[in-house]
Image (cartoon, rainbow, N blue to C red; front, side):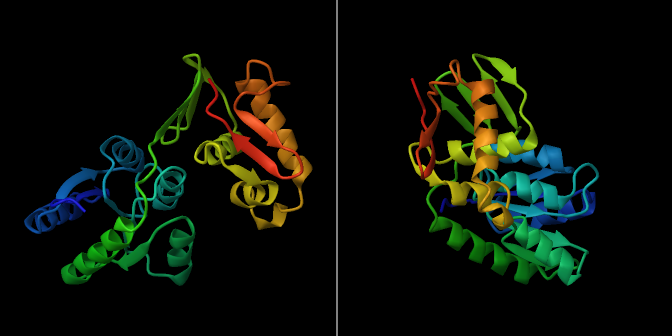
Length: 231
């Protein structure tokens, strides 16, 4: 861990942003702030913070969505700070990828303790993934949900993008049908291998120069698929 870990605070309350900036800076953290979800996601992709403090009630997209989108490409620890104290909201935030949940108003010492714990755990995990993956003529921007081929944007559905992102984040690794189905669609789809084949075919038509002889989305017969960075 660096001498000054970088914390990104995403909250739409100016007084909370000011207070956290003052407190955390005094504790030798480097602090960046954002007042809405989209700005927070953009800063997370460019600044690559060591930890994110996140409010759920944001003016554009809610904190649950921010969690889910961050988790598509990053392992950065996320601590939710929210006035919502129901068990349902806590479980939903954790299911979407948050590491911890603290209800406002909160104690500063408790927040600092949870930050220290999250950073310790994060230090034991291999480095977070980059937000942009390049593979031959393909560029996959995981944070912005944009895919380009030869500098031309390719329109993908949300599910197509999620499938591509999961494969591309594990280049060269064979991913089983079941692991892909559970990650992209959920455990209830574990037996729907034909469903997966249809989506792979759609992606190949959109991304491969010759879908019949793919360079990136490779089949491992009877097992699953492998993403190749190609030429």
